[in-house]
Length: 180
Image (tube, rainbow, N blue to C red; front, side, top):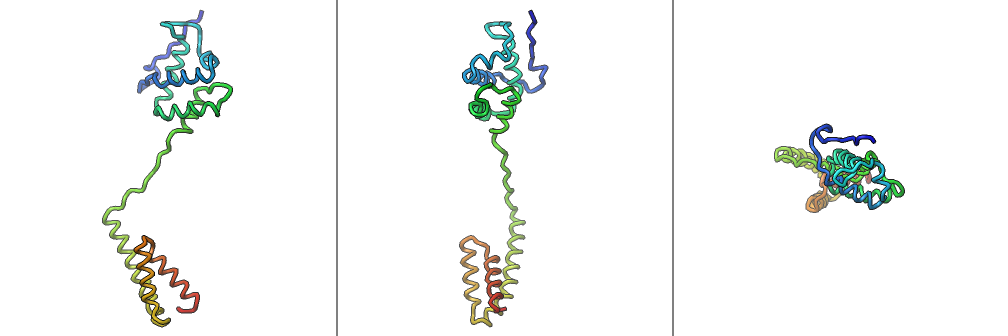
């Protein structure tokens, strides 16, 4: 009879995984697929009531699943019902399911420093001043639209909008009508 292959976690490298999560996976897979799942690794050599082949396979699975949190692994188990309805997944297939369900990293923009915010505000105020200078002569010539433009820009600003863009749109509309 063949001697069972024994895989130690030391031979696989650090960190040493726990087999708790792998044991949960094996229980769920046994529930889904019955003996078909466990028979992939069973070698008939039993020590302490556990098949050595299944025990070694569980250690290898634990090593591969060490980089996923429990929720990701449990979600991957749930996906087995639809992704592998007839036959149990191999370890690479199960790892692919874990990759598919693991949470994605989200990148947020860093908040602006006070100096950068002040600089950007200064630039925006300067652009607004330039636009108002261009619009005011046109507004005076077209019957006093300066107050209206200023009121619209202030309303847009109070609503949280881009007052510069609003003034530009008004400037384009006025130029299109022949006011500039």
